[in-house]
Image 1 (cartoon, rainbow, N blue to C red):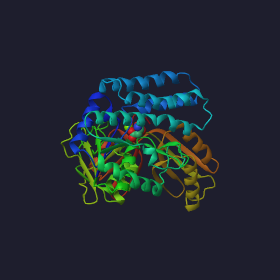
Image 2 (tube, rainbow, N blue to C red; image 1 turned 135 degrees about the vertical axis):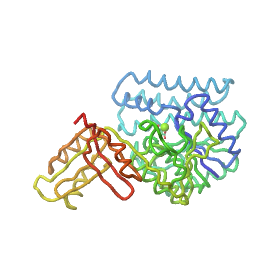
Image 3 (cartoon, helix red, strand yellow; image 1 turned 45 degrees about the vertical axis):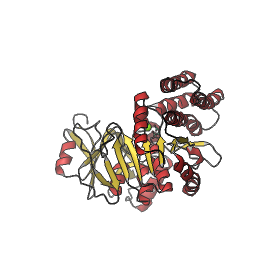
Length: 423
Ligand code: ASP
Ligand code: MG
């Protein structure tokens, strides 16, 4: 059996959905698990709705109307028979948020957020499953929350692997033998049966969880790019597709911020040696990128850009050296504030890190650090990570830049820099 994952961009409108259906149908009539995200930018819109509800903003009702209209417009075009149960099914799914919006936002923000945003995946999967059935492919819709079991760390829930694997193995093989099974990415449920999400863009990770539990022969992520590219086309005019990647390199690239695959995706499938393919839903006949243990990475230099970085320089107030004790104290403060370190370098008396500029988090972090350390910081930095770098690639990205920090390992170079004209 195989697992296919389709993201929001592939199902953003009626043509997109019809194209996805063709890709599914050309696989065959059974032994395929399909994981879908919310359609287009629905999660962004639901996120706005969740924040409006949490902040008591009445604008929330209009936001929900917009999300509903977007989906019912698509349903109207796909199902000419208005008696098709999908009309009621989707309407009922929205009623659950309507109830929630009627109440005061008394629960914790992260909990409310998850109950609201999960609806995007629930409705997209219901529409696509119904459409597959209408188009003659027997499709079994399954609620991912019956399978993906999590803790209650809402918005970034951790998967309880044992329970999850058991549920998947117990029920899904029977359905897979009968037809195409279609479920949602991104969502799971806590032991108390509340919806929890796995973090933004987490549908890839969901597909990997199902693949690992089912020992899939392959997993394929269908994207709007031809495969894993050596740079985001947003930053580079000339990009190259990497035809083959080892798991190791794929983990490194996604860890440093390549957004083509969610970083948590690789590990579960690597543990089971399941090859992962990244392919284009626009050109489904093309090979894409293969990520596997056999694959030897062709060392094409890859570039990963992160803007809006803050470079922090932290030194002990008492002029002690940066030793284990200070480091563990510093890391504990980062952990407490949930700030992820993008790159770091330490010298005898100072420790430098580059982090994403989330203003509220960074203000709290600096205030906590300032109790024992002297903290200097610089905003509006850029971080570029080059995998398989050489001097030429470094020179290419640092034109007109002032380099503030450079960290090199054998295969990876990270540079924190700023426009030279804008010191
Ligand atoms: N729909 C979710 C998001 O946009 C999950 C995903 O797309 O992977 O974050
Ligand atoms: Mg998405």
